[in-house]
Length: 318
Image 1 (cartoon, rainbow, N blue to C red):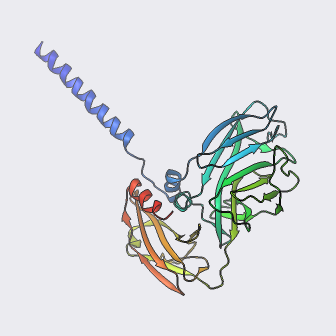
Image 2 (image 1 turned 30 degrees about the horizontal axis):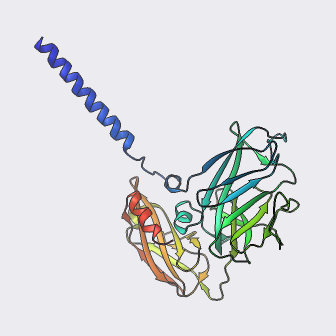
Image 3 (image 1 turned 90 degrees about the vertical axis):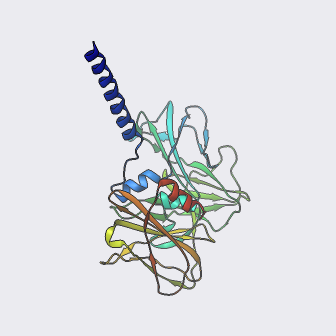
C-alpha cells in the first residue's frame, strides 16, 4: 500500500513538472532568428472586417481613424467573376514614426525622402482567395490629420525582387470638391480631394498606399553609422527618425566592414538613429540623437533589450 501511495505521489509530481515545463515553453517568446522574424514580430497588425456590398456601398473605420468606403459590387475574383456575399477586408494603419520603424516601412521613394501623412494597407478576401477591384472601380479613403498639406500625393508600396520596401508615386489628379454619396472619381488611378481636416482620395488600387510628398532638401548629405560591437552581431539594420517632420529613412548601403550609409538627407535636422541587430537569437538595439551635418560618422553601441524596452524607447520619438 505504501508503495502504491509513493508511486501515485511520484506520478502526480511528474505531471506537475511536465505541465510547468509545457507552460513555460508556451509563455516563452519565440526568439528572432532573422531580421525578417524581428519585423514580423513587431510590425503593426492587420485589422479584420466583414462587409457585404451586393446591394449598397460599405464603409469600415480603423482603430486610428482611417475610413475606407467600397462601392456596390466593388470586387471580382482572380478569374474575373463578380465577388458576392460576405467579403473579408484587412486594414493596416501606420501613422506614427515608431510604427514605421517597427513595420519596416520607411518614408522614401527610390532613396528620396518623403514627408508622410499616413501609410495604410488594404486587401480583400473571399473564402481565403484574394480579390481585386473590378474594372473602373475606385475606393474612397479618408485619413485623419491634425493639419492638411495640400502638396500631398499618393504612392503605392511594394518589395520588388527582394529589394527593400519602396514607395512609388501614383499619377494623382486634384479635385477641388470633396465627394458626397458615391460621387467620387472612378476614371483615374487616383484623385485627391481638398479638405481642411483630413486627407480624402479615391484610388483604383489595393495594397500598400501612402499619402506623402517629396521633402525638399536644398542642402543635403549622407551619414555613415558603425557599431562598437558589430563583430558580435549579425543582420544589423538602422533607421533615421526625424524629430520635426513625420519621416523615417533607412540605411541601405553597406560596406565590407559593416558600416551603413544613409541616402541623401537634409543638413541641420535633428534625427535619432535607431539600430537593431541579433545575437544568438537575442534582440539588440541602440539609439543616438544627432544633428545632421556634412560627412558625419556616428558610432552606436548595441545592447540587449526586451520587447517593452524597445517599444517604449521608440514611442518617445513619435
